[in-house]
Length: 155
Picture 1 (cartoon, rainbow, N blue to C red):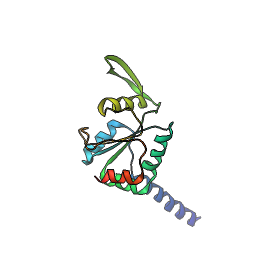
Picture 2: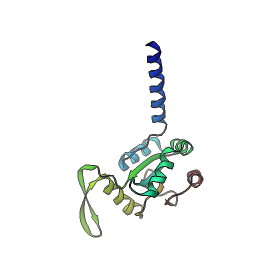
Picture 3: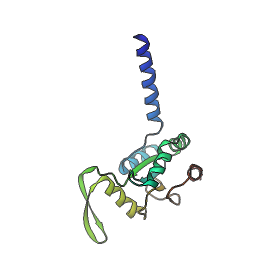
């Protein structure tokens, strides 16, 4: 029984360690707050879960150890799924094409931010911004290789 307790403690510590390696943030405002607190640029990843190209990039961005290490070291990684149907507590009223609309889901909010602040409406899209939301690098659009992403993160 004592050995089982030690084994569970070791396994639990390993899992917690992996979870703390890269703390992806799945909220735009939270990512901005974190970037200001740690004084790092933001790695914005606009993606989804229902199309082939974003799914490929999700596996690369969220699953490759070398990329995860680079993100952890140099950026605040923010993943925004534009097809997230989670309702937001208070719908946001915004002006879109001269009309007032209500944004009721997280995904619609992320898509609105992507198109209005970063002038794209495509996934996957990677944008590196500073804590004031200024774009620091030319955005990367579409499926890219691991080598292309690592090179982009190094520039």
